[in-house]
Amino acid sequence: MARSPLTLAALATAAVPGLEVAGAAALGSHGRGDVDSALLSTRDGRSLVIRVPRTPAAENEQSADLVALRALSDGVRSRLPFAVPRMLGQAPVDGTRALVSEFVAGTPLSLEAITPGIAASIGHAIAAIHGLPTSVVADVGLPQRRPTDVVRDAVVTMDRAAATGLVPAALLARWEAAAEDSTLWQFTPAVINGSLGASSFLAVGETVTGVLGWSHLQVGDPARDLFWLLGASDPVVAESGLDAYHQARGMHDRQVGRRAVFAAELEVARWLLHGTEQRSTEIVDDAVEMLGALLDRVQGDVMNPLTPEPSRSATLTDAIELSESTPPGPPSGDSHAEPGWSGPRHPSSP
Image (cartoon, rainbow, N blue to C red; front, side, top):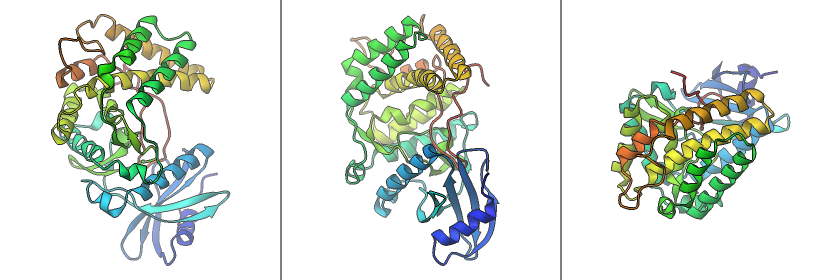
């Protein structure tokens, strides 16, 4: 049974000494996810959030998020153009723990609601994350993944997906060619959030005000934080976001757009693997349908392969054109609501 906001408020007073709660309200889809959560108002005028995981998976994610947030010191946060939740206290409860954090103002985004203006702000926000010194991650022992690690993980995903016998041979050939193209993987690893999606961002108007969900903070491939933008139904959204990103970061990585497309396509394979692991016929059937739709979009697209021709370099326009033929994969990230993976938006969805 879900914990009520009043129960959560009582837990918050145990987690934060001296805290005086003036009001409590349910937050997000309270009682229907993996986390019990409430928005608290305090007598000194602050707004806080308390979350208590309800499943082992949610507890693991909470623990990883806590480690990452501790790595984001005041100095690091001052380099970011948006707010990051600050943990204020914790208290044990029923074999797990309640965490209290500052509330970050802003409206959680959905992919369908992102305008080109918001996308530009998102691009700048992601560039700021990628511009952080890698010591932020290294000093706390979080993962540091080299290009060879990224390729190896992609190959493992491809092999596992191929073993299901449900991935079209033409898609496997397309992905194998990308994995074997050394020019695609010549990038400098950067600090990445690692699990960004539309719901990771909070915005006021067309300005990003906060980023939530840091449990996969690491040094890795910048494309990992960008691929989800390619799922926007309006290609101008992806173009605006990627253009703003490149303006803020500089065009040091000319292949990041193609790697983002590759990552987006592999998300469909991961969705298939998720379905097989969960023994969910519904998820598997959905993934198979998405793979078929993806194949229809790319098999005749000889002008925009994942691997560029030797005589030319990939451009931002190439990446946008590729994104128009790529169905969105499973969403990543967190929001003010409980974390969870509800599956990918279907290619035919509005």
